[in-house]
Image 1 (tube, helix red, strand yellow):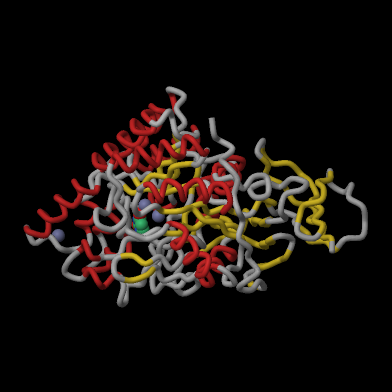
Image 2: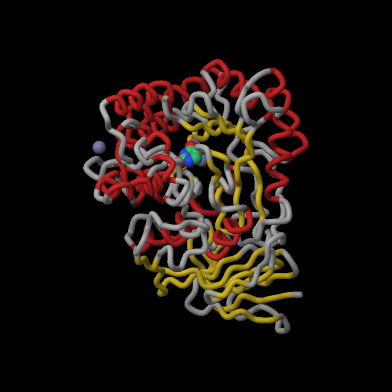
Length: 466
Ligand code: DUC
Ligand code: ZN
Ligand code: ZN
Ligand code: ZN
């Protein structure tokens, strides 16, 4: 079956251009100058709309077991919400727990996601214990499982933490097999000292989560990860959820030296602040507990992050979607902020929130599409199947209405959360129609997809390998 998306403005890597996009089955067949396409196919009229590649969210945690509970979105609820918000591919994180065989961890995540996703998905692998077996498993995952990126944690001692020796060994292996190392860069042992001291002083409410995770400990870990990667012959390194100016300075300095270092940020760090959390009554601040934490509005973090997106020192915007309800989940940390499960859910809103950056003059249209779709696809070996409107690519396409408005609220969102970190926000722009592999799965606010239609995407090596 073929479909023609007509009269729209396609946003490509070099900017906007008027074109008609012909879809044949699951892929894009051709791009025509306006009005030049042959008659025949069913037409979707995109007059007044931007035609952009479906969003690629390279960092989500559906149903992640964490903090004595599990992230509240399943692969079903979370990928449906993503789809409605214009994201047509996610890369979630399979987890190897301490002491577990890496491949067993991966199999568990395939079991959770398989048959339940509304959109296509891939996996990164979190290594919970770098040893000889895990290093061998890295080769196998890169070689035959389509998993070409491995996340390590410098934070969370006793949960996910790797020490510097383990990190170096994993980096050396990644240098050999072409994989990307993704780093949660916060100095966990130092944070744990600050947390213990705060609790001993009776500082138990949610705001102390952020206050015990100062930017120095993000910058130090970022710098250490960059230096360790240099010792591993410049293994490709991707810093996840970068939130702080001084961490960005480390990435920038490395990139200015031509180093193979990349970073992402997330909508929460571009918009929300520690003061939003501080202003919330009682335990409400728990809604904004995530790691890395929100930063103070009195420092230059948000402006610096937007600038980093413009200069490509920040390459990608992903969500780190890791939702927990207040009831029975965030509430685990009543009386002890360190027991609040960490995470904010925004997989449904990333495309819209970043479009607001275009309206506010902080990003060009091309850069918007690059940071939310094209670069994540290229960074993680899904390009050109994903992330671009081009002949041969999957017909994952969003018609975006620049004149629409989006109101974010728990009343209307589709994520399985009993609150929103963005409650009441009204922003410019609106997702109008979403196609995933040629199928219209959302249009005009109506959802028409189904669980199980999303497919696992085995990934290749990063386009950004040196
Ligand atoms: N940060 C979060 O906020 N949640 C899950 C894990 C992480 O690193
Ligand atoms: Zn992390
Ligand atoms: Zn307090
Ligand atoms: Zn994460």
